[in-house]
Image (cartoon, rainbow, N blue to C red; front, side, top):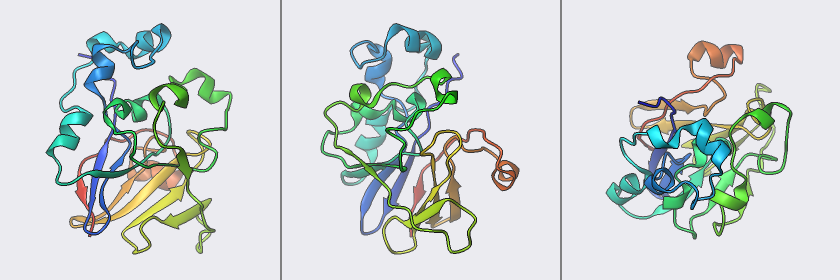
Length: 203
């Protein structure tokens, strides 16, 4: 079984509705990757023929109450946007500053599909307008819903526009770091790795 992991996290805000943090995996992409804009090189790296989906993005969206109000991306590497074929074209999309335009030597060797493929015909990517961190610990922060329930945090490194999300949930605070790190020690020491995400309810 392929261990290639595509993360997604469903947030349910009591007033603002449902939001995905990253997108998981679309069964359409696995069944016909070429049709979804995945070239042969990326298919080879991903081993799309071996991918096993426990729950596709479409199944997640079908099982939630209400419509999807938006997608909050931690960054735009392919393992975080592979569910986009299942996201309706009118859904708003949010990314970190410079994430869709900046390039780096490091990212040349990370599987990535250009936004004009998996994001074709979708809504324009909206960049966060980060404000200075009052405690001067991060590049910038923004109160996503202006109610203190979700904060987007600028954490450039894995990609220039990488964004983490601090969420106040019914089970306590949760920090979603995308591929910035995957342990508490890694976060505090600024060590870049990956984490997996689960479903949370925002209070």
